[in-house]
Length: 488
Image (cartoon, rainbow, N blue to C red):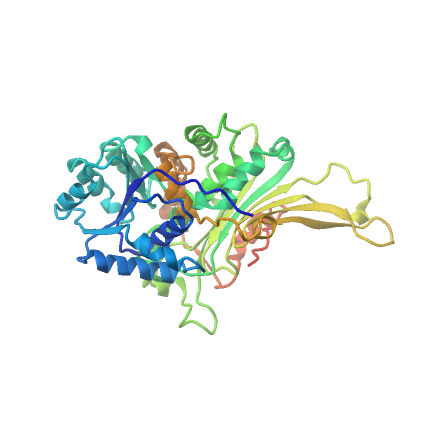
């Protein structure tokens, strides 16, 4: 099955931090795939900007290495490589000084095209970059800036950052990126909810028993130890990624598929979230893998702090105080060094109010599982009669739609960063967070973190390769429920 690729208008994309890890792993290979798909117009320019002193040829060699290592090159793409590299440029620049800005201004001057500036740098530099873009006449109404997370580390810093960016750019020029929202299945979540009459009438507390959102990783903190130990799972994952998934699964139907209409409904969900009670949250910290501590050390060894109280695992229960979801619990869970890599939203429907088949038929529930990674797809559990004689024995079977199988392998496969960057060029903010949305998420998160700090809370240890602390499973057992198994 093929998909129709619509080219975007001519553009210049300046990547501040263009030699960094994110640019090499995601941004540059993603742009090359869009080029191969025919979506990048002739004359579009990719301009790397970083502190490193290198020539344009050096930068092009770096871009080629990144594409070959992290792309990787697929059959037939080699013929596009020279053309793509010809559209890349490089300017050494000082984000906090004056060096390089005159050269960037000269390069951008006199072009009638979309201008996008990707801040693939430390958040500490966001304000400096915004200020210098305006100072050098690069912050006109055609300009757009892309801001990576973390967007603040609490409500106060998020507000300060919003004010700083607002001093130089309008809100509709600021694209706060969360790559989870660029995943195909996340967008299919909206299509499933609002494009099918089958689900929407049942999408409420009358029919839904509870909802689980799990983002599990098998890796540890790796080389991000210094950053991660200052953030933890709550700041790094719950406040943004899981919060966004929660909003999409719980929000009201927007009046139209329009950026502000969608984000208005997401904001209502965040503002309706109940505070999390102390006994409804579990923090964990992974321990070394038994018999393999050298390769997979414990969290404290990985971050170089034997007394660290930063969590690598969070499980919590919350409610949304509105008419649609009153009384329906939402369980969120994320962690590192878990048993399997999996991102999944599970909607567990209530049992039938009365079973005509008697107690021997057992208890059965429909479960809708939306899998974000790996093997993107949607599964709906349906109760049927078990084949064969011997009475009415009921079993649950899945109606499975794995996208790669259902839609074929021939389509244009678009990764999250590719889609989001193209949306920036189009000026479509639907999949990006608005400033008030970010602040509302921090307003809900801050009291949780402040409570831990006030109590000197210590995370519960859990084994690497497990499903987290046993207290997380106990939290659901108290409610007569259990976590959905984390499958690879």
